[in-house]
Length: 214
Image (cartoon, rainbow, N blue to C red; front, side, top):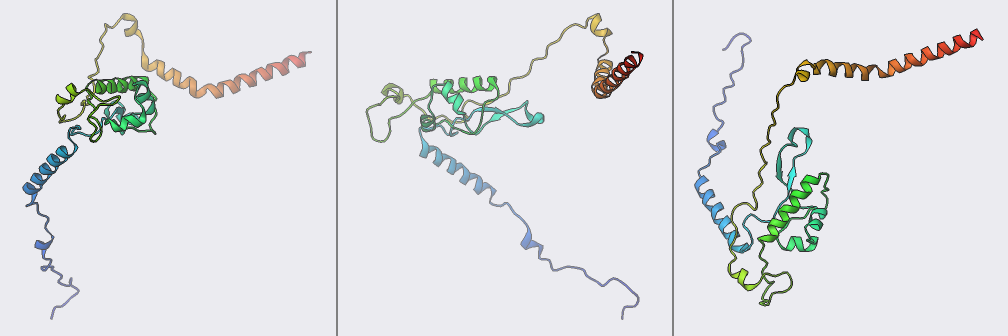
């Protein structure tokens, strides 16, 4: 019999850990199945681009990430109008449309319009269904014969490297103390209300003193 106030033996030796181990023995097979699925999708949507719809270039939100650019959800109605493309036709020729996004930057608007114009210059539109005669907006038979399916990303997005401008330090710049200027302006802003109040009180006292002399 065990004496004293000891810990009750609770060694857990029957957890069956082999049943709870995550394995990835199917990784090579999954890789092959994904490759086959990509090839089947490319053949199904041919001759449309493998990458899908054309996306705009947008800037990431917040001050932390707004220096980076990425692909957006779709082009705005203003960008499509500037490029001469209707919102109904845009989706049918492989252009993503986002009616909720607004253009707050002229530079982004111009970049996306240029992106749309580059896409239009290389676009080949096939006739719909069994219609062998091209309609308005369709490409001529000569271009249809040269059409190939585009692989890889459509017009890859890359942020241009920011150029650093250098200039010589002048004596005036060396004699200026920016830290002191910032501290003085900060103090002026913080004390503006109190100084205005004191000035109003002094003006009131001076007015009362002038009235007494009369």
